[in-house]
Image (tube, rainbow, N blue to C red; front, side):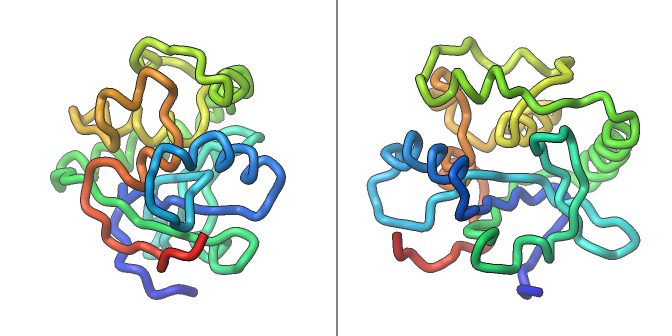
Length: 180
């Protein structure tokens, strides 16, 4: 597995070589000017018994998967972002994320994702109590729960994308070398 400096609530931005990944990148890569390995997915790091896991929204809903799933060419980490969460916020978020995960109450939002490529305007992220969302929206909602944000407010009006987190606020802890 890659030796990345991961902490709980870090956001990993990933790139998958798939049709859906290609479509997401096609509609969002123009948001950054430089050529780079653009992310099409993201999730939050949470440790389970010392093992780094990714809490992520997938087509089947909120899932918990090992970081090692992203250690290959087809699905790979292209950036790790970090916000200044306090230790208390990290402990609270870990409890919240695990209880949300085990409840099975959060589903993927295909409707919101289908709106995204057409850039339908959405008003903010007042969906904190929603049970349907997509990956980058999930990461932003968790950040907003603690009065933080991965993105500049101007980005949110057109739907938040993984690339907005990849090149948004927060410290870039690790970034794959540019090539595409």
